[in-house]
Structures are given as structure tokens and as C-alpha cells.
Image 1 (cartoon, one colour):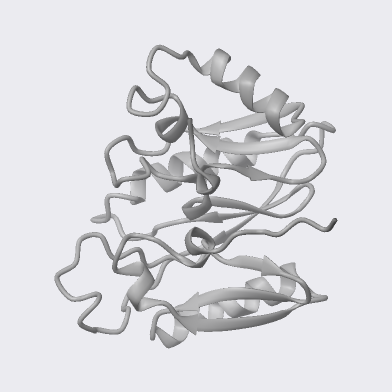
Image 2 (image 1 turned 90 degrees about the horizontal axis):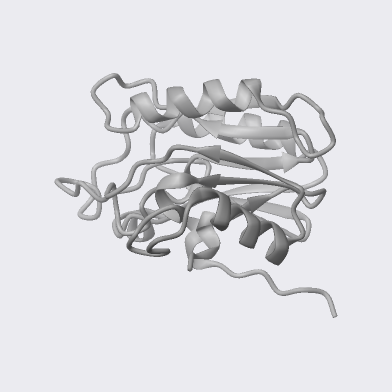
Length: 200
């Protein structure tokens, strides 16, 4: 059992998942990582899964991958890098980055990894102040036809850095940033509250 935010794929046979979310007794009791991997590969048509540790018990999702790493295109990954040594995400994002930099995709390519840091000074609002669940991060964006819908948090420098990188990674799409404080207050982001519709 798992949720959409726990799955990240490149469309060419490679997936990125967090062990904390998938290899966890609260979702898949008694399942080993190998068994979870076999099932995911079969269901999603994957040839390779890159496993990141994540953080068990961090939140209700047990650290969905869509807050930590996303494919911008096959072979190109954008990863959350929390540079605040006092943050609970600092060590795990460093570990994720080290894994991704050494990883290859299903076609044997070494991944090109870009980093995106969360805002250091998000706007103070009734949603963010005193809220330990407030999910201030840019990785949880959503790609739609012709655009990328991304968050902004009122931190001018970090918001601009995120916009710059996403514009570079998605040159054929308009990047639109939105205030998502009400969504972030519940521990989620744009990708958490959207759903893809397949072409039929």
C-alpha cells in the first residue's frame, strides 16, 4: 500500500522512492524492500528503483519522495537540500543527495542532480507560525500541460532561486508560483493535492 506522493518516475523505467514510506509496517507489514520493489516494478513498468532513506514517523506520509526528489526529465533530478543544520531534514537531505549523485538510471546514465533549498525565512502567517507541520519546500511542484505550478513562501531570495531553476529545467513551460500556505499548513504541497488525468 502507498500513496501517489510516494512515487516518482521518469517515464523511461526509473523510479525514486523513500524506504521510510514504502518499507514500513504501517503500510506494508511484513514486506521486505525486495518484495516492495518487485511489486512496484511490476505495477509501474519500472526497471530500476533508486531508494532514498526518508524519515519514518516524520509526518503522516513517512516522508513521501515528492518532498525530496523529482525527475525534471529522464536522467535529470532536482533534490531538496536543507542547508539549515538545525532542521530535521538537514541530515536526510544530505544523505539523499549523496545517493542521487552516485546513482544511475535504468539506462545506465549517471544522474544530473540539481538542488533546491527550502526558504530560510518564509512569511509569517496564521498558517505557518508555531506550526511544526508547515511544509515549506519547493520540490512539491506540479507539472501540467504548458506550465509548472510551484509554491512561493514570501522569501524573496529563495522564491527567486526556485523560479530560476524550474525555468531552466522546464524551458518549454511557464513556471507559475502560488502562495500555498494553507496547503503547507497541513504538511503538504501542490503535488499532494492534485491528480493527473491520462490522455485517452
